[in-house]
Length: 165
Image (cartoon, rainbow, N blue to C red; front, side, top):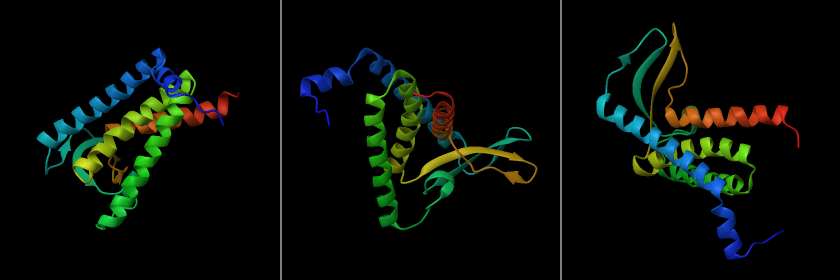
């Protein structure tokens, strides 16, 4: 295992390309926060019809993806939040040691993850508001952070199939 000195770690962490990707993470986070703030301020209790396929419908998700593990138990909520935080810390580490294409992928995932963990810590729930549907079929309600996380994961999977080391 290769341990870097504190100076080497600092230089490694603050490489020029890392700064650009940190800005992408920050931009993703800010875009997510702005969208959630706008929705929370303007669409509290009613569903807003946009067209035959999309509505704005603010719901508060206390679970993880798709409402999974949603519970009123403070202990379970706190445990899940801690696990999510640890996963985010691990992703930051992977981000820092990755190649640039992977840094782009992890930047999208981390920006969205920071947006959702922020909501879990501040509001004790994540505001989801994008309601996609076709006739009576409704997809799980989601938010902008979920879009970035999903795009990052899809690109990561596709990259795994087509780009070999």
